[in-house]
Image (tube, rainbow, N blue to C red):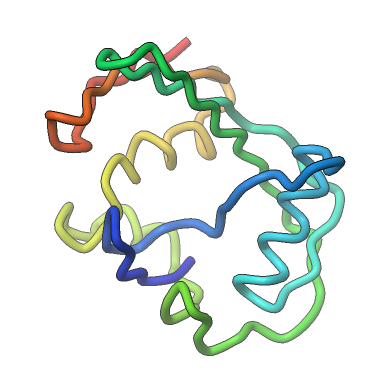
Length: 136
């Protein structure tokens, strides 16, 4: 995890990013984690998909969430995204909302609850990023 100060949001967040042309979702996850943490991950398991639906213009945005315990390398101290660090799960779950990136708890739920695989949230550019999620 890292504490970010981005143009769109701030707070504790998981590594993430975009898919490059010709790259699979899996491979993009491996690359983004390496770029943002210095860790080489493998044997990733898909643990959730978040479907964002913009009510302003009909744009749709998908987020694929992967998890693993199989990694190697040295954790970087900091990247352009922010400070990089480990945090115990209990400590993370007890963080005040203003210390977490928007919607972080919804994302975390998909990592931890094997009975759900998908979340959907409608959003508007006129609204804050706080959204109502439907889990399936």
